[in-house]
Image (cartoon, rainbow over all chains, first blue to last red; front, side, top):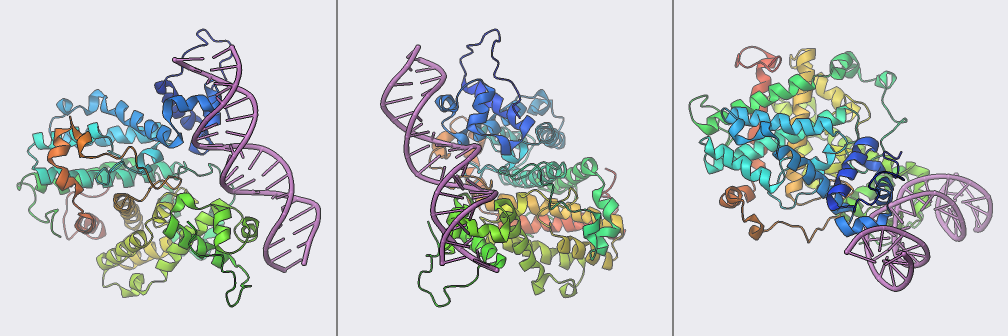
Length: 246
Length: 246
DNA sequence: ACCTGAACACCGTTCAAGT
DNA sequence: ACCTGAACACCGTTCAAGT
């Protein structure tokens, strides 16, 4: 279960255990063993230290999990692919951000539920685009591309709903527990073909249901969102229906 | 913290504590005290019983939480508003189901994260439409309204993504913890206006961001999804873009 | 048949004590 | 200054014992 052995006789045995090192170790641990297995005691063991030492750097389990989320978002925010300057137009920018967030989800499937579901620090912060730097550059970039204030905010809302729904379901489809606290293996209670007696519609469509269409689903749903946002931006694409006031 | 007192001298003191009663008590407890506060011991106290008695009926905390989800979905599945026969056409059916699921979310904001994030029992099951009866009637109803097998499944996927993203964010915006395990109150770490120094775009748009547009956002995004699904159904509405193959 | 007391192996977190 | 041992108040879960 332990990922890294306590590092008993490594070179610099007394590396002073910074906050950064604790958070990084947590990400590694979650990626390897799942969120359900993470405890302060076990994480500490990974670092060759006792649980109580962690409290000098993270002030509690909850704050540690928040720090994990922040670290992942900061990594992405620094990615050259998602810099406003890298984008040709606003559609290109949204595609880059969308694919960047999706990369977090696919690279850290055990961590993503945390990004998606940790309670935001303010009611207007919407996962998964949930750090102040992200929200600020997102809004600023759209306005740079001629979105008005209301349009930029509407786009933020629609875009985050889209990302959250798709990516949480994509990660769930990888059979990673979505709920942070969950047990990773549920050998019992798993539904098999034989449980579908009485559910003819499901049985008839079972191959289609099981088909992994996450890639094309994500892409086409994103394009559909871009089309929906276009009339927001300027009236030249489609006049009906407007996003507002339905 | 305790909702219902242990019922010390009520009429039928020896009501025999069925599975149904345990699950119902759990829903009541979560609605009142939040998911974070639910423990087997505390729930038992609510029923005037010791924790160990619960295990005769629910086989563990995880199964109890699954049973809560199932109960909420079963309630909705029995609602006359969402019966296939009640719907005028497929758009009307999807609107009814969407609003039904939204009602669960708004009536039980502390429970909904469970519906959204409990690991599904099979990879092709997509929260929040996650019970076999629901999936079966959903697919059957769409096919009744001339959706082909592939179109029905695509609609299931797009519809669930839409519901999950919107409703999870709407509930989060009510400041209910999204993550099942979380502490409900975080007095520290809450972002206020003064923390926005350096984030001019956020500060400029703060009233728009804080505006509660959940109703219109849900409605207009739903209409947008219906438009997107229409060409799937038959070619008569819009020819471009098709959902598939983008 | 139904419920419970006591116990087990864990948690997160605290604080005075060690080095 | 940094880490730890021991302790506290909890968990979920088990099992033999009570009624």
